[in-house]
Amino acid sequence: MSILAITLICLCSSGKYTGAEVSKQRAVDTIFSICPQRFEPITKRRVTHYAIVQATTGWNDHYNPVSVRAMKRQDKAARIQAILDERFPKPPIPLDHDDPFTLLVAVLLSAQCTDIRVNQVTPALFARAHTPELMADVPVEEIRTIIRPCGLSPQKAKAISGLSRILLDDHNGEVPQTLAELEKLPGVGHKTASVVMAQAFGVPSMPIDTHIHRCAWRWGLSNGKSVEQTERDLVRTFPKDRWNELHLQIIWFGRTTCPAMRHDPDECTICTWAMSKARRAEEKRRRKR
Image (cartoon, rainbow, N blue to C red; front, side, top):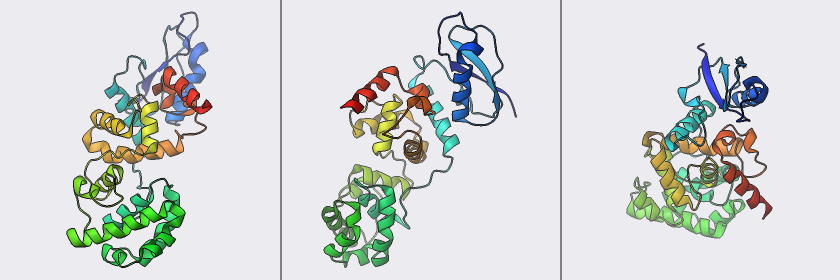
């Protein structure tokens, strides 16, 4: 396997220490956290801003770190994309479903509810009715009883019943394949419609959930003012043909490595280099509120 030289930002900018003295442990920790294959720090020459190490891996060139301040948005995005590809090469869809209709219902139920809970509830619901035609015949109160563990059951039950009837009346019992038509359905907002477009029909979309919104802000890819702004920033940053996969990859990364609570940027394989000092300080202030 070829040897790739990795440049890591050093802990010290003065020139009175060697790379081995200043940043050997930081280099070891960072490389191992990103790609835990065997590696060996070997350089001991004197440096000022950088420590040079060598890693015995076949990393993509996007893993070559550069100064965070000098890193352009596209360079940062490429490096993030490479890390996500390494961690989640084939990210699964979190919500269990069999077709566009069951996915639509599952995504609707996931509003202010965990995917785990939704996956616990939908088997009973879909055993009762798994098509718009069957669902339209189920009394709203019965739907509400089944989906109660998901929260907001009165509104969600009415929405599921209502959209099932609309699909029958206006779309021949099929889930529409345009964002505009999906967003006309009861209980279906932009995020829900985008998920269906991406995961049911393969149309490039970048649905923004809480994990993606949080990670994009931490990584300096968006200012975090709104999910709408985050979506605009991400679709401008990443290649269109990667949106659907990246949407899932960032969700899984946010859940497993970059959680909302008890998050240590120095332990996160992306935040450790992508999260600025200002955003680290801002996150600490938010936690104290």
